[in-house]
Amino acid sequence: MGDCAVNLVKSRSYYTSDGRKIIEAIFDVTLSNSYASGGDTLDLSKYFKEIDIIEVETPIVGSYLVEVDRANKKVKAYSDVGTEVTGGTDLSGVTFRIRVVGTG
Image (cartoon, rainbow, N blue to C red; front, side):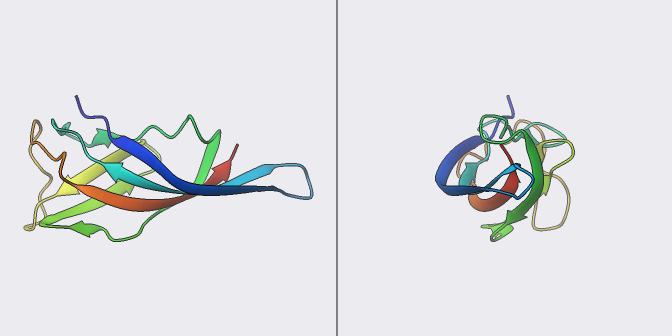
């Protein structure tokens, strides 16, 4: 219950002068068919050791506002009146794009 589906669209990586591997990636994220109160889990550990930036391309999807809580690895969804969506709601039709920068 409450896990986002993540689809890698494209990525690139490069090394800094101090040897850190920087990864920039774009993902399509789809919310779950049973939204978890407090947000669906966004697990990007398969791609990144540490995340520095997550940007949402278009935060309004249909009648929902999506917000990424990077620190807690969650995606929160709000209704058009600004209240968080009720737990258990099917949001599997809500897909949005994010840009992520971090280390690998």
